[in-house]
Amino acid sequence: MKKILFLAVALLASQWAFAQQFSLPILPEKMWPSDYAKYETDILNCCNYLLTSDPAFNHPKHEECSSFLVRWLSGTPEVSIPVSADLTDVKKPELLMAYLAAWTRQALQYKDTAPIVCANVAVEEMLRYYESYKESVGKSSLTEKLIKAQSEGKLAAIVAKALTE
Image 1: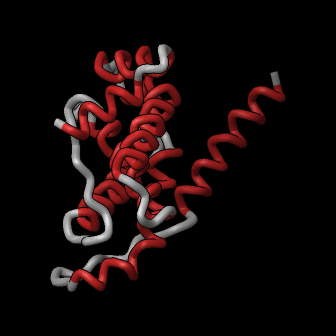
Image 2 (image 1 turned 45 degrees about the horizontal axis):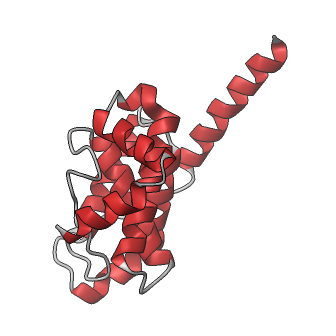
């Protein structure tokens, strides 16, 4: 019993420590397209945080990272993400943010990655996120459908179709 309690405390402490490891700068109101590159490390930290943290655990940090990512994505020329209702449940903001974070991380880490590759990575990461934090996110029938398609080997075809529509 003591081992289980110790493990639970250690896991919570590690999530808290990770949440405190980085702070986000304030993006200036006016930025040139070339200014966005200066924030790529901060964006990667945000993406990693959003993809590895329970949205219910540190809600203010989760919201801060989400806002920072969306603001950066709205102006950067480096990353452009098509959002399809066939690939992510837009009614579940946590899943949408996981999709955006995974796509962004892939695009920044592997420059010149084809959109289809980014989309596949984003959907797969979003599905992992959903399975890890389903209790906090809530049930999503679309995501359940995508998980079933993934297990049947049909996910790549769904992603390709959604990107071409």
